[in-house]
Length: 206
Length: 157
View 1 (spheres, one colour):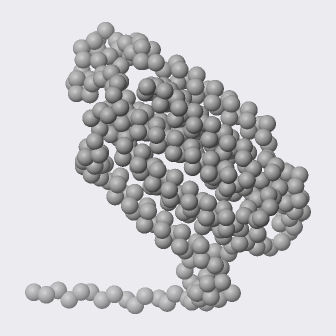
View 2 (tube, one colour; view 1 turned 90 degrees about the vertical axis):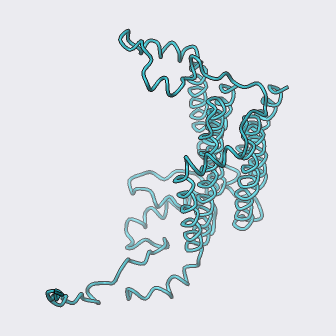
View 3 (cartoon, helix red, strand yellow; view 1 turned 30 degrees about the horizontal axis):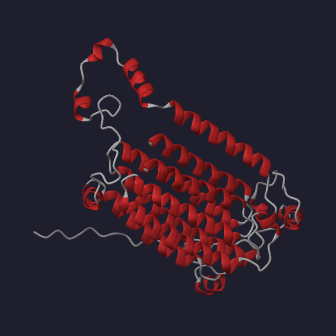
């Protein structure tokens, strides 16, 4: 059942991504992107991340894409323009993307846990056969780590995520809030019309 | 299952790359960047799930935050660009390239850009590109006066 859900959500996400790349109407492409983001949220839910799945739906699909749709409908002309109908260098772009995809999938397929364990063993010389303090403190996932859990529920609760965020990753969260504040100020300043800027600046006379 | 997730993340990333290289609409180019971010987020969640670590989820929350800020700033910049030249095409901004770089494209906007290439090398200033206000005051018009000499501080007994 779980693998059916995984492949179902993943196929929806990839098909929606393909539609996003190929649709000519910009609003249709943005809606296909929203569908892809919703499918990716479903994948997050299958990976024991309920809070991130909900945050993705609300923030990404709910706010960011809506901003994009607003600006798209504001800046776009009525009929399809040439920049929507003709793409620049499609053959080279497709070749580059296929090469990158092939390379990434090959590398991901090669990095199975048994090959990683073999490379770990090859790196350990006979002198370092005793497990060091670091190895006993941090359990390695290749030899005796936790196996992948079968159930979707698991022990990840939002309480644990909140505790982790505000104790171990406190600096990260505070910096993210600061970046949000700076971005708000910057977006308001940039979006003002040039006439306001010219009338307000009296520092240097032309 | 982690391998499948990594493959799907790579697939989303490559679709985003394909969209970015192919599209000429400024907003859809930026939306392809967001799709690349979505692929990378899936990677983070997959590794967090495999290693029983919450750090993957925390970083994806950070990615969502930064992507939202980036979208707001980029869209306000795009609005300013559209107000300046009136089109969402990225080919009309080819005058920002280096002077020796060839201009490409076969559409009317690209030919306009090519014509502008000839005039860009000759005209002074930056044409209709936005002018930034220089920081500070012009020292020729607001000369800096010499600082008064400092007196020794009176030491209190």
